[in-house]
Amino acid sequence: METKITDQIYWIGVFDWLCRDFHGYAVRRGVSYNSYLVCGSAGTAIIDGVKAPFVGEQLEHLARHGVSADSVSYVVVNHAELDHSSGLPALLAACHGATVVCDAKCEKTLRCYFDDACDWRFRIVREGESLSLGDVTLSFVETPMAHWPESMMTYVPERGVLFSMDAFGQHYPSYSLFDDLVPFGDVMHELRHYYANILQPLGRTTGAAVKKALPLRLSCICPSHGVVWRKYISEVVEAYQKWSGGVTDQKVVVCYDSMWGSTEAMARAVADGASQVAGTRVCLFHIRHVLMSDIMDELLEAGGLAFGSPTQNTMYLPEVGALLTDIQGLRPALRAGLVFGSCGWVATGAERLQTALRSLGLEMVSEKPVCCQWKPSADVLAACREAGRSLSLKVKGDGVE
Image (cartoon, rainbow, N blue to C red; front, side, top):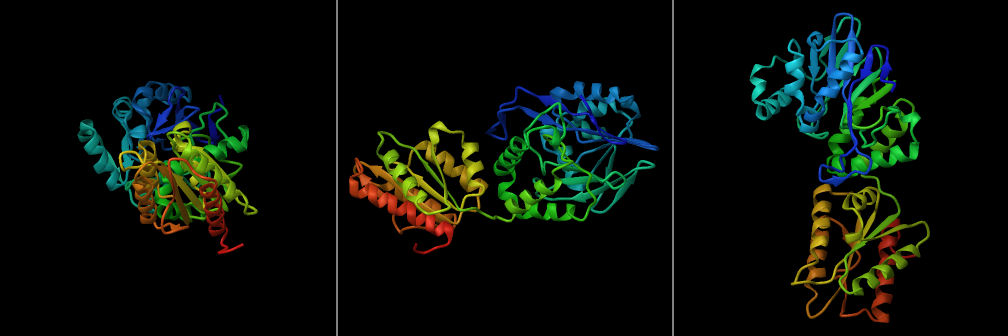
């Protein structure tokens, strides 16, 4: 495996091929925990740690580059979250001469996590400060809430390499390591999936972090997960600018759960109506048969959401509630909404769902949800199609066609 990023900079990370759950969302390919080695004429630095079970591999990768652990000068911690920091006690026990470099908030977090931290040597850095390794320099860029308060990036100006931490990351572990050596569409899908399920609610602060990176000369962006960007830097920066800016497409996502098929029939009618507006892309999901993280991925660029549920015990169905919670937390930049559903004797499930979507600031197609009792009639299905069409027109920006 080629691990050289540029002269003096190497990958010493690890792969967790068995991981299928990360931050509560499903991953299909596994996960990489990227760590990097910077070798200067007057010192060496490890940029970011790995998850605790993999420190042994990380140290093996360090040794392959002819660097002994006890010769490491610095361990830079860009982010204190445990997928990157839980291995620090073992790493620093091996690199016993190293100083931990981080910002003040990161130091506080590490001291809360690890009892060993009382024995660590810290060097606290701030925005714009630099650390010389002789013929190469580490410069620090603070990026709070992209995605934790203590997050920062590290830049090597002599090589044009930015260690971007979780920004620009993807769960795409690959021995090929670089973006131009893997299928571009696949890795961009994983970039979007990662952003949608982790960084989406932090668009403003993530956008601010991207803005700080724009003036830098960039030959490579090295994130903490996934491939290193060297060919498609402008494409990923453009994607992040779009997502962090809340730019949506002419797209409608229809999500529903159903007990006996009535709400499902209504969902299909809504989707049919939405698709009748030229240029609208429509996605239809029965949420018990789709990963929630995939739905959030589709919602990232969607302008409209149609959400359906029958009423059960005066509420919407439990899986609907779970997806609603994810939407409330991740806060996609939806503009318009529609609620529909069947019921037996009360329609409170759909009514509660309508209230929830309105509280997110969505412009609702109608004051009340589209409901039916027991089974949708031909008239109800026609109303669903018309509601779907109206939602699609709102997303397109037309009040009427």
